[in-house]
Length: 79
Image 1 (tube, helix red, strand yellow):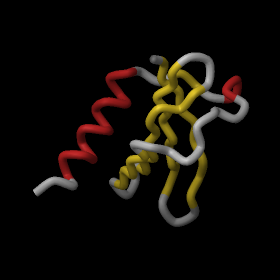
Image 2 (tube, helix red, strand yellow):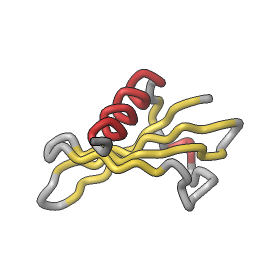
Image 3 (cartoon, helix red, strand yellow):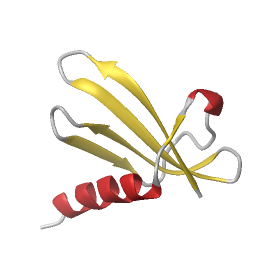
Image 4 (cartoon, helix red, strand yellow):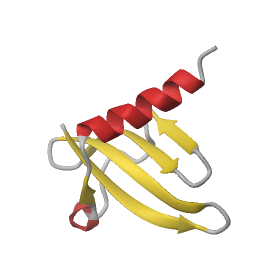
């Protein structure tokens, strides 16, 4: 697996970071969106988009970063 990320400004919220867990060359297994300024994390365990678009524009992310955010969000949705 490899991990990639990109960023996009969301007016009124801050910077949204999209992190992707990728298998093979460009198959998206899981993804998440994180807006640290407002503490939002949205998980996509079965994303609709299955193939990366222009992966050469994405930055590298670490497995640790992805897993930390995933576990943080998954833990906060359980009671």
